[in-house]
Amino acid sequence: MKILGIETSCDETSVAIVTDQKQILSNCIWSQIKIHQEYGGVIPEIAARNHLHYLPRIVDQAFKDANCKFDDIDAIAVTAGPGLIGGVLIGVLYAQGLSLGLNKPCYGINHLEGHALTPRLTEDVPFPFLLLLVSGGHCQFLEVSGVGKYTLLGSTIDDAVGEAFDKVAKMMGLPYPGGPEIEKLAKLGDENTFDLPKPLYHAKNYNLSFSGLKTAVKNIIDKQAMPLSHTFKCNMAASFQKVVGDIFVKKTKDLLEFYKFERMVIAGGVAANQYLKQRLEFVVHEKNASLFTPPISLCTDNAAMIAWACIEKIQAGIQSEPLVPRPRWPLY
Image (tube, rainbow, N blue to C red; front, side):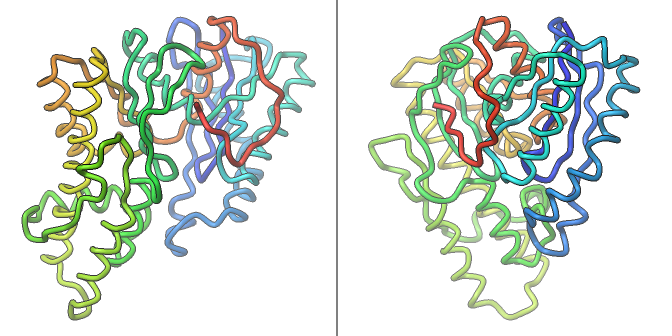
């Protein structure tokens, strides 16, 4: 079985062809990062217009890379949400057109479910497992007991961690996207320079909060002479990243102790952060559990994860939901 996947929910235009034998025949990604850098973040209308312009040629490239023809695919999978509605709408309409023209079924896939199931594309990850879903727009702990079976255990009550990374980076004048820039500078800094708060660290639940941490960083920056020195940026990046790591380690440790999970998955764009991965790897192994993360190339938005989520749903006997673009679409 070959599935054509389409992903246009934010600023990556991606098309992939994946088989039920876990073969990624192609996974083409056209990023708009350079376009949005001058604005310091993604501009939804500009993102949508670029999806409209580039999607047809990315589709052609995906088929070329996979050495496939349109008739070779068995179904089409497209991100139907959550995401920027303009981009989601373009992907859905294009997929519907292909579906009608090729007489192939079309599945609307939850973008978050794509992230959640990605590790099962590259490794053997049995259910159930603890999922830490971390991206620019989402930050959640979930129990995953099967395809389509998600239970929320904890979530951010304000900013997502990826959003916090981007905003702190912007405060220091770093380019968009801020996450990789923070991680890069943190390697050169002293993580004990600044005593930053850890919101909800001792709370008797598994919720997260990053708004207060972000505000604390802003207050320190506001007291500095401008322009900020390179040393200051490195030390602040390291201190900020350490506190984020401390928070995730504490919540993960509490969850593993209470629920006795044997496996944990980290997925989403922030899963590409190697510092956070190493911190969590230590505590997971300390609790005699196994940690799974996708390859870095599959952490950020891509269509291979959308195609794979579709394959998982088909194999689980789950029928496609109505193909309606949704800016918000909770996984649980």
